Image 1 (cartoon, rainbow, N blue to C red):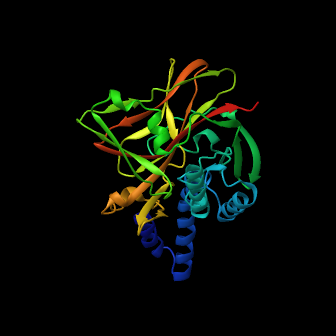
Image 2 (cartoon, helix red, strand yellow):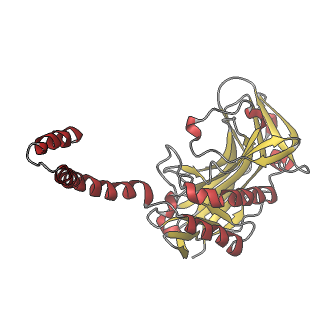
Length: 331
């Protein structure tokens, strides 16, 4: 296009003796050539980049809403990819996650995001494309500009006893597994609690199941299982809930990138992950980093047996405050 305009300018120079007439004609023709691409780009980029993200004003209002309208133990879920919303609310949400985790008290879940994103998809990050949540499990409670606040319409009931190391150990039969050695150490999150350290002998992965289980009946609207635990950031081993029955057993983490802390001088400080973390160097010493995990999965319809388990992949695995909830429909 640029070459064409240049050639046009040379041709017109032979037609017009007044230089300003030639310049005006070239400008008009160039505008005519560029008008359609400009209008297409104007429609293209907002649809690609702007429509499903919060504005600065909306994100500020959400932050005020969280402060004013939510309880200290009410979990707030938001999309990690919304960098504006994340800038204004992530630290608030991270503090809530830590408080729920340490005090083992959950007072419901709110999902906040753009109106064009289904609330069940707000937790999805990276390559995770499927959500175990149902569209029918959400109730709209607030509109803030183009953002929507939905409540997960469930009641949270603790499934087993507390997440302290002695209570968790009592739910697992250690004597049957000679390849495992379990010890405890002080929790980095709270000084009055101890966490589990599980050493696995051998290189193969091991699913360490609890000997305690419960029977749950699920009919009608979807119910869920929520697991909460702390671990070292770099470890691959995780904790969770197993359930019997046929069907898909997909699970999704809530605010997966927001529960990371770094240990410094005997305390844990919240560590915000850079929006372009995939392109930035990894910190030198990952031993100092810890993570709080919230994971949710759907129940099957009908009666099913549920039990806790550790999926052990590392030689040394660290677990703190492992506890879980049954989320059953309120209506």
